[in-house]
Length: 349
Image (cartoon, rainbow, N blue to C red):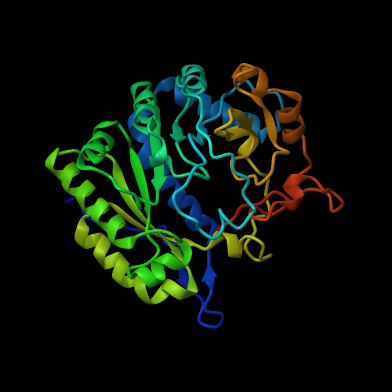
């Protein structure tokens, strides 16, 4: 049992007595993300990756629009299929194709980026464990010394064989979404999910990991903070500790707090320099939190990554005025998660 790493110095959820709401600190979020991502990438660092990271930061600081650096972080949507009907994903705001990424597109991209890439997240709008090749995706990145992470609802039949394959795949980090300790509370957001099945899968995964003597993957219990589940949060934290989960994360209800003016960071968005996203239809996007197609920059099955990374679309995005002009009607100005004038969520100015 590895013990529970509870969010101490990077605690992000603090009650506001007057509003009974979530008050968040940008600096605490940075600490949280640094701890999480450091846990993923530290085993995969090389001199070349560090040099690329330094160049990436320099080009961002200098407002360069044509980059010599490569992205540090890649988000890959292997599938947008899902077995649940969670409120945000299925409220009509997220378009779905119900398809799977071409594995060859992924391998070609990893071959190009792996020498400098720090981390790949193999999930987005879909449930990654519904992809029958998800273990191959993880292994391909792991064999090329790239940190890997997936986030799963874990509410599906998972055999001991499948859980063993996950542990042995090279996966660095697994987030399991569990937003309540009773089916009634859990099901309010994770519609269609079965809490008993989730907990059984989690317990067996931890047992198998211990039996194999493996420290990986690090396992995070992720719980979204809702008014309706607050009476179960401490019990969930205690159960996570009892089971031997590595980290318990109480995450803000970002889709409610993003639009609020007080949850905004007034600074320049760094995503077009540091990261990019691949959708399951092989589209490359400059933004992994977008809700429409305005930031798609091309098809990976038609063009090389380098050509798309410095395409006219990417150059124009990096050239945007930050903060955006008041009359700017582009996607970044309309973003309901980050401040439309180039901000960050989970923050309290």
